[in-house]
Picture 1 (cartoon, rainbow, N blue to C red):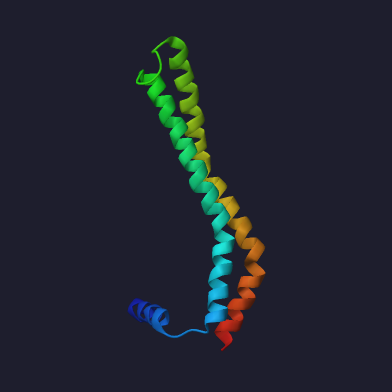
Picture 2: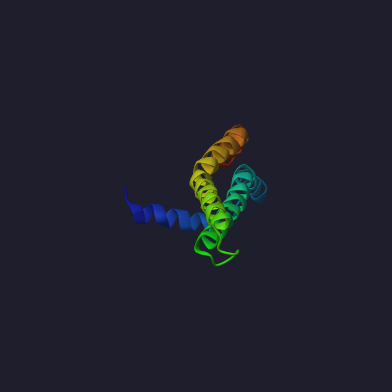
Length: 117
């Protein structure tokens, strides 16, 4: 396959006038299928990273009173944060697949209508 030709066709498709109602509807459906997974993933990832950071700070004695209790609490929070960060991507993949499956029929039908013209 000629990759330059494929790239040129994709680029030309971006600049050609489109049947706006169907193309816009297709893009909206695609975004609607992907948005919940992205929002959850970013939110959950940020929270898990913050928990991990607080756990690290407690363990190193940067915050808290540097007692044994704070050290142990820091380790526990760090482990919780590591688990949260570790499971974030698999959760994203499952949520994305579920969203795509939910809107797959509508997206395929609309894409067929657009491509048949």
